[in-house]
Image (tube, rainbow, N blue to C red; front, top):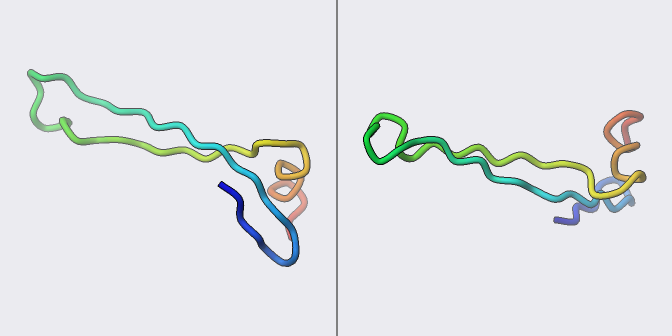
Length: 50
C-alpha cells in the first residue's frame, strides 16, 4: 500500500493473522491485519513524524 501524506510517500505491507478452529465457533471469524513499513524511509516517517 502506498499512502501520500504531506507530500511524502509512505510504503507499507500488510500481514493477516486469523484465529480460530472449526471446533470453536466463538472465535471463528477473528482476523487481525497489521501494517509494517516497507522501506527505511517509510519507517522514519513513523519515528520522526511528517
